[in-house]
Image (cartoon, rainbow, N blue to C red; front, side, top):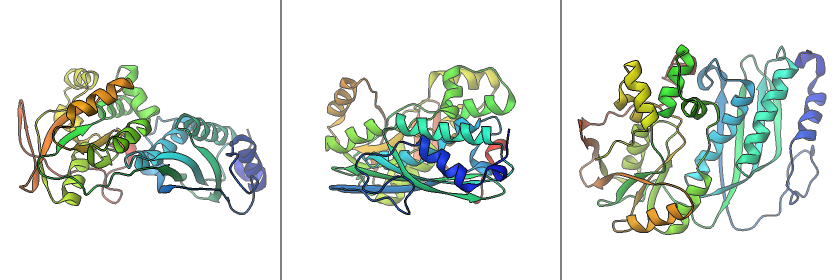
Length: 327
């Protein structure tokens, strides 16, 4: 199988262009110097970079890494209530990379794009010793949800349960037997696009953030931005993750609050709107979990059965945390 250096940049660009689907609204053809789009309404955009040394566990395939790069970027605008429309994908690759691995990476990016309802409209290729994938997302929204809107009395909620990625990553690194759902949480994460849009359109939500840096960090981010405190009264612990942790002697508190990369949404709801929002989600086959409340006193505390105390602020920090292969 040839190496990228043997094929050259122009061949790789043509390969990418032939396999990315461009939205019909694009005013310039694929491969031009820029992308031009007819656009109206509110534009929401974000960018995220996947770095192999820190963000990709050793056992993740190239396909899975490509999938994750897109899901991670889309999750940020999903937390704002936006729908992804277009992606710019820039890949930094080692010239010694085999073309077959490049193919799998592109397939992962493309399939994740399709799953999340977005089109690739451009990007860039560059030479790097350690691979990276930078994904810029351009989306649209009628309403957006900020981080700083929580008020004392608001209800703290999430779109899902936690601990799966903590357990799945542990199983991946140490070769442990684990339920497929736990492993898939690492291999095929999904951004909560529909959930985010429902939250924004409901008029019931005051603040929102995604949980890619860990549930504890997400709650602290909401608290810091809104100038409130939080009391967590229920641990949103996934049952499969709980079983795995008990079986392998792992701390379920760590699994819930410090796993990271769940891509669930963490948000606050106006008091009295809980039933409405729950019914709205159930009508779409979705679930919502109410786990606490916002209070005037600053800080984040846990007062759940079996757990009580201050919730330490620890989460993913690109300049401090150990590489993904050793987390």
